[in-house]
Picture 1 (cartoon, rainbow, N blue to C red):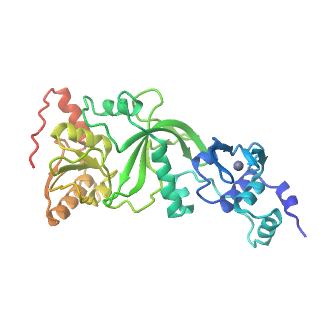
Picture 2 (cartoon, rainbow, N blue to C red):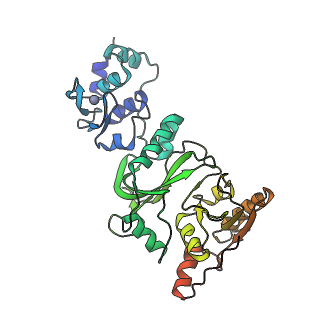
Length: 357
Ligand SMILES: [Zn+2]
């Protein structure tokens, strides 16, 4: 009879990865785990005592306290046994009894791929941890400098819905880099956090990071993490509504630009589809909603400007729900309010429209 120890001698690193993928809980298999940074031990806890160093390509790890408080190291088989509290013989029986061989899988490269393996509880834990580990913004920090570059002259309340962290950027199997990252808290109408949206910044300059994969693909500096809950209806609550009036936009920068142009406290919904599904939360006394649309170029397939079309969809629904609604669009097709704010500043024609409730 075949023995597991003989099979393991032939295993490639990808097969060790596959073993961990298959037999460790998704909550253990975080970006932090795969990146080999110190973190909590999946067996004995703590904060930073455990490192997945994979030094022999056999799922290798080391923990400072796993041996009754003393250091311990092992391979992927030992880790799977310890985390799942099963013996080597039990795992061997399971692996050899498996009709299908262990198929090497790609590492979870993107939030979407991670998401496929995660329970709703693990997803919520993952986004909550990212939020809790990020720091509140402070005057002059990297996030504030970025925002001041995108929206020159920006004056707004310090955002409690934005934080700053240094995060690894993963793509396919590789960590592309570590970037200062704006972490935005996306809340549903009932106040539950559904995801965090991340904007990776250049480590030196106050601009978005240029993220390039190993094969030269330019990757998006902005992306959501996993969705712990469906995102429909939610927004990033950038500033408190005032006197029952709230503005909404697709993006972070356009929210601030619209705030500067119109003096309206503004939230953002991440994209036009979510903007069209925005739900006004109870408890703020909101009676008037300003929709600041992106004036996208016309889509030849639909004959419509997508940003405008979704803004009008939202306006129609909110009016039917009894809200006073005003739709605003930039003067020039193919621009958004961020462009409009910059242009108006350059022209020196800054006349914020008075806010009417
Ligand atoms: Zn341990």
